[in-house]
Length: 255
Ligand SMILES: [Zn+2]
Image: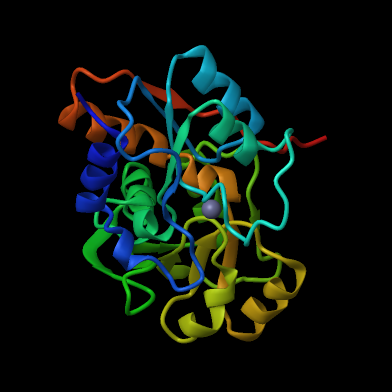
């Protein structure tokens, strides 16, 4: 019998929950640790669609990257995802920044995808001392539009956004999955291109000031790559378990 706790313990080996950022809420967030697992749905978010899919596939555990409870809950109404998870006895394990930080985790997956499209030096450094983000060097400098096209292909993005005014060649690339533009100041002088997602207006100007070419590949596309990665690890560890990969698609479309 495989329990929710068994899955938690296994995830804790490759992405230890203790490595999470102070502001994060990764962990076993909903359910009964002793419950037998009938199947695991792996999703970027525990959305309404993910909840529905778990029900259809007979999964009573959802593993997600984004924590389904992030801010303290002030009310709990019947229509909410959190309420329904508890009501339907579907457990939730959410592994957010530990999966960003983990060796082989989301940021390393982005680098691996880039390597399939462009030659990168072997050496990599984290952006933050705790292991978040990566900095890697291109074997040959290229222009920002060229690199933007490569990243777009590597991450299968519909669209990418990049700094309009940046003219120089880029060589040293920093990467942070999801929404990393608050790290720009930490990157001053350490790279000349920063690939992340969810870039807000003011960050484009800060990047200009710091002479860093900013590349926004979208929150969804920089992180959805975690699904097959986690699924493969769980299948290897628990071959008898029903594992469902649920990449529901970008929640945003473009006119
Ligand atoms: Zn994210």
